[in-house]
Amino acid sequence: MSQSKRPSAVSFMGRKSMTEDWLGPAIDAHYQELCKPSWRKVKHLISPSGCWNVCPRAVQFRQLGYSPRFSAQTRRRMDNGTAVHERWEGIFSEMGLVVMEEQYMAGADFGGTPDNLLHKPGDDDNKLLAEIKSINSNGWRNLPWAGQIKGVYRGAGFAPTNMAALAKIQPRHIAQWLAYDRILLENGHDIGKGVIFYENKDNQQYGYFFVVRDDPLFAALTENAQTALTWNRKGSLIGMPFAFTSPQCKDCDARDVCHRMEEGDAGLLKKVRARLQETKIPGKLNK
Image: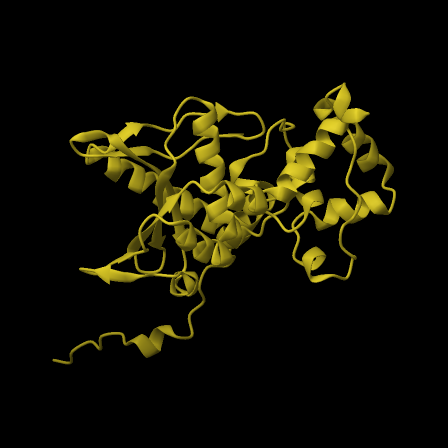
């Protein structure tokens, strides 16, 4: 009695798959809509997450509500970063370290939602302002780690010199932490020290840097944002600080609207001028 032959993988190689791939195009269409540029609500205060930028005009467009186009991959990276942030917040809460959860606060020039305020167990007066970040392996290797204990990477202790070293590599992160510390101070919470907590998004290794209030560094890192806010309060748009062909312009996410303004796009000019009227503060700033 002959045995029937079992089909081999080779016998399937010539067979057709689905008649159409609808999944990929559907995902692409979703992200195309999700990531398109838009104009959102005008910001009257500087957002800590965007308070460092090489170009004050780029900051100004963001304060006026411009949200640039992101690539789909960038959006997914941002979403993964949010998930990392939420996971560590949950862990710190389970550990009983959280003494102040996220809440929006406004100061004189800055407004935003600081990450968790943590305290040392058994010592409510020993508080740290935490800023949680995710970073890839290349960025991780560039951070100025002082060493590691039991596999956990740690920066050096509280000192302005350590802040400067980290600020050279991640100025945006230091500026953001300093801005949140300023907001807390202006709302009656004199913390002045904290931790920037990193997770390597490629392997989930974590590490952290202790940081401390540094007013001169804060002023230097946020100078362009402060300039943008001043011009918004005057109701005027900053001229282009860089040439169209400059590296700064090439890599800027506000490039499209910035150059359309210079080219005289009537619709865009009208929109921006109307938004500048929203941010304008009458009085001595405009004299």
